[in-house]
Length: 451
Image 1 (cartoon, rainbow, N blue to C red):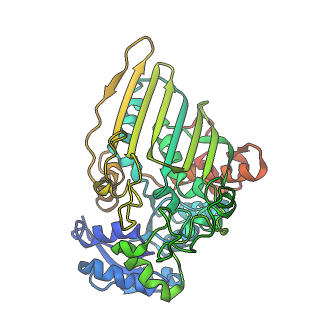
Image 2 (tube, rainbow, N blue to C red):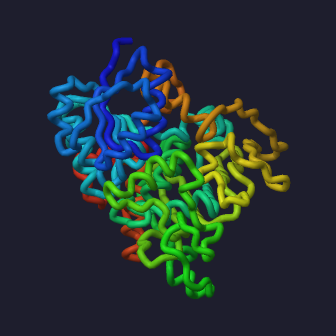
Image 3 (spheres, rainbow, N blue to C red):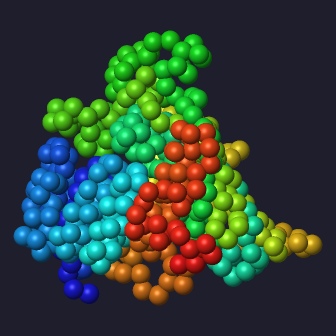
């Protein structure tokens, strides 16, 4: 393959996976020629962490289009905060580059319209990195459904629980403000909605949502009598507890955020029980699909364990996938724990009663249940990250499961969250067809769910 030239926007935690890939495993096909972050300290830290990258050009993100043209950039990787995705994807496409964007595609109807219009106008490619599609356990469920083993899908029940380390983390950082992230229905659940769309090969048609902020936040803390708390986790205040994140105990968090606060004032370790949180921590949705299936979905962000359960009902039987990513949150004597067990499963301590595990069971009507073997996955996100990176940098090749996701898949996932947020505000179901998403409406308009 020819060497492709890359630019990257945003060098926070998630960007480090791409930077490591560009510095090590994909140097024969990819070169980072430019990168941008509003915090120069994060660029400095990233350069030191990945010296093989050399000295990519640093630039102001507002000049992305100029840099694409001046540096002959082929692909722009967007790993900036969610509410900026549309701005940078559109700028990349208009300047003549393809875009690789972290989920979610964007956070609102305006962003959907802008990306769809630019993609159709330019003909450039937008890849959205849904790494969970590539996890062997999720691919195994896709194979079962696609092979017709449970017949035509009639309904899906999907519950995802985030624990009090990983789930709590969304309430410490910029995600806690809905204007930045769209809330968990957009930032986190777009992963899950994409899986359902992909598993059953259908498109969402109507969404009804319920939920609220019921555990984190100042009001909930006061109701439970938690008392006064330090404003942040990185402190020697004796009032800090297991919900406090001390960034001094983690080299990566300290280097990317704590040591760089003097540049931009961004505080990564806010108290999860303060008054400045505008996102929900408990959510439930009913989603009607174009071909008649119904999804019941629940997300909880303060569970004692982390993982998910999926049950897919069909005309011939039922498939059940159960995944435990962490059985309990274990904090050492220095207050340290693994924040995201899906990203670093190698560092997760096992729980004897609820060990990390994955199990796929299929049962047809009038027949005994059978367990479907799941190939071993290695690395982050159930083994999905490495396969995703191969896809991004080397191309998908032959993939009968269709795991590569483009902007239309991003639209189909994010419109569930957009409609869900509207439903939360209105207390009524929202038809996807009624959303003002312009050219993107074609991605979800086919009444038969065909693509």
